[in-house]
Length: 627
Image (cartoon, rainbow, N blue to C red; front, side, top):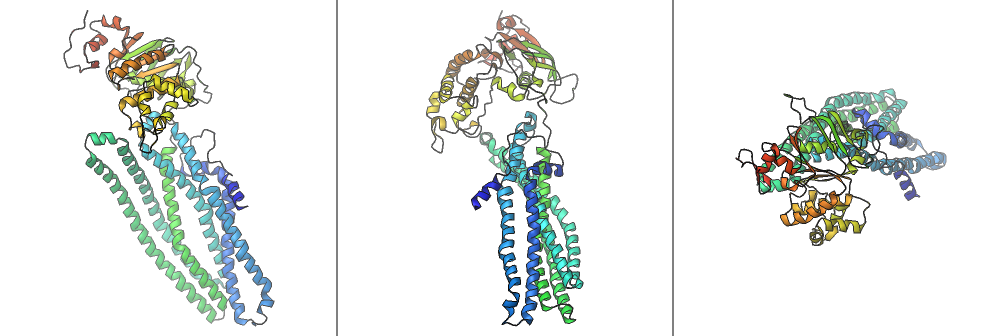
């Protein structure tokens, strides 16, 4: 029965809803309500049970006080016979009702909400963040984003549960105690009223300070995590430049800021405890003195003294806890606010409400008067892409050539819709890419870049990323075509996993640059998309492996529309057409042979400056192009 109840509560709200999440509201309370709605029934039940629990507890103290009075005047021989029903009712309330209420409240909290609440928020927030634009991730620490997602989930859960259960329980307990004091003698409640006033003043003075300091701590914690993760992620660079000491200082600076926030918070906490101890002592001595004086003038009984002093002791035990819960509530508000600033940002690149999947029949690509400047104002008429117009025919292999900053990579990023263009139009087979879903657009384009990063998963998972439903035979075949089978067979990771089961490390750091590139090529071979983007796809390979893979790339390019970006011109010289870009514009186009005939052209100049297959700086005098 108990296991069934636990499972029933655990499954009342789905932790992993399949629907794509909406943008959360950008206000703290709106953010909290947005993620809390599915839990309203459980929260309401927990709220009612908390109120019931506090009323029962005060009633138990009140009953004990009355029992003391009866024991003082009762005949021992007849006491149980005369009070058996009252005593049995007390036992029923204390042993069954109170325990049942507490167990039910604990079950709702622990099984229904404690785990599911935070996990559902993390799931939804993660899915929303996953669909943020590339620009968003370029401007934020990955570790900082992850920390805020994790912390905001806990913050929302704790705010709501403290308000509906802890604070509700305490409020009802105080009201019930106040009522019970008045039922004995209204003057017995005077110390409690004075204590509540001083308690409220104490909270008003200290809690907002703690809230602001806690918000600062949460932000510093995220910053420190971001800095540390950034260092760990770029460990090869740290080692190569021998900058461990520099990274020590970088982390120390962030940790010092965080420690300063902690010290400030702890000072306020100590001062708050001093004030609370003082007013608690006043409540205890004031209540005891008032009770004794009222007994002395025969206004209350001995049982009332026992009840009032016992209840005050219980309240004093709660006072520190309550104040810390309230301070924690403000801290949670700060954590949620800190998370809202990141999680609730608008997606810069969004699918239109009526966006449909892209249907690629031929693979024609059209850039029609495209203007783009990464959201920056145009200065001196200079844009990253300035009215670029280009048509790539179905199945055509086009090479993009130009100096650094010419706009080549920007062109491919816009085709992938990592950014939205300023004006103009980009279309595939007549379909404006802004009118189709981003998922379907990117599913139709295979990409191999020079800076290849792999997921910290097995080799098999990394290759299968190109086509998740691929069979084992397909994966092995793709690896073979990419000339990766041999080194994969010899892989062993620190956990003893071998071959295709071996994990490659974060961003693939356990593999060499050439090995990572071959896994990436296998992934794209497996994807077999109708449009292919090659951005220095073989730059990390040695000449022998490059020549072997080039044959398979040629086979892969067969029947596909291809855009190849290269600084090593020899790798794209055989393309159907070469597009030469400069300052965001197309300045030359034609075949390799046609462009070499333009002796004063940019391509001919770049070709002449080749040294070992790579471009050399412009300030080195180059020989004149051959006739």
